[in-house]
Image 1 (cartoon, rainbow, N blue to C red):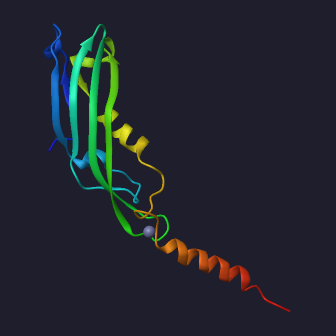
Image 2 (image 1 turned 30 degrees about the vertical axis):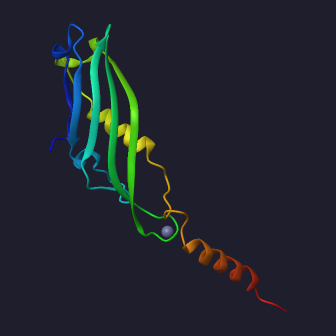
Image 3 (image 1 turned 90 degrees about the vertical axis):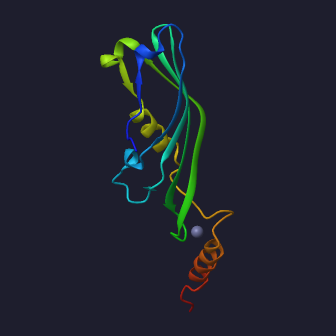
Length: 143
Ligand SMILES: [Zn+2]
């Protein structure tokens, strides 16, 4: 599985559209952040074409990642799905007329993933936590 998604500009001249349907390796999302874990392929679909002096990519990105619930730290499996993303790059800024869109994909995923996750439908530990906080509050030493 690839960690790169390369678009060859010369294949897009004269109004040609390239259909993209790829699975990228989760290694693309390797991170030092040990809270997020990526083990599933990153599905990328959509199309690439030229518009005047620009390369335009219209992409859908889907993957699954693991992140802990912020309350009970249970490992949660979360779906990441973004549709209809647009990336543009000026042709003059693309070296060798080959554009690697994987960095953009990586940046987008990290930008869009929420900072905190919680068990589906609200963590069941919430009530426990409330009780605990309340007990602590009421449990202050009495005279
Ligand atoms: Zn939870």
